Image 1: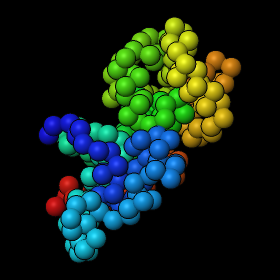
Image 2: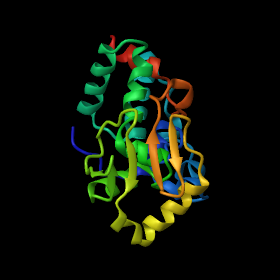
Image 3: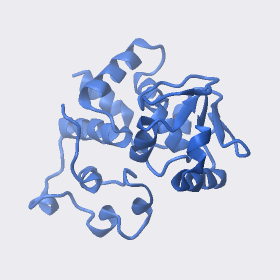
Amino acid sequence: MAKYTGPRCRLCRRDGIKLFLKGDRCYSNKCAVEKRSYAPGVHGKGRKKAKEYGLQLREKQKTRHIYGVLERQFHNYFERAERQRGITGENLLSLLERRLDNVVYRLGLSGSRMEARQLILHGHFMVNDKKVNIPSYMVKVGDEIAFQEKSKDIPRVKELIDRAAQATPPAWFEYRYDQARGKVVALPKREQIDAPVAEHLVVELYSR
């Protein structure tokens, strides 16, 4: 499946919920979901209630859109989650949360996951003091994430560092404000993940 290049706000309207794909715009009165809270398209207002399969499929698509992964990537994450001990749906969310682009976003060092991917691809971030430019890089307990020193002179990066100092990261992170450096201190648990998804529906879909 090719990368989605269409309007991000259209995805939020299709899923009927804010996915926070465009950073600050999602918190403003310009948010498309606030202005038009119905599905896109000519027949958006008159769409019928989805049946069981439709609900499961919609939940999977919504989860994909939130974390910005493609179909094959998502399926690979699901298979990996299924092989792990524990509850498959919770394992899946834990894997998605541990992607470097999501970690950067959760630490408040980007306005959105899309911006985090762009910053990572441009080589602005380090993991354990080594440059990493792979957004899907899977962090583990003990990893430390920070901007490269030379990147800290960029105005947007300065703004993000100041913003992160005001934010409260999830409990599975430790953030040192004086160094603008985050550390993964534990694997994320379901109650620490605020993604508005019903992961059991995704598991039911793949179990059909």
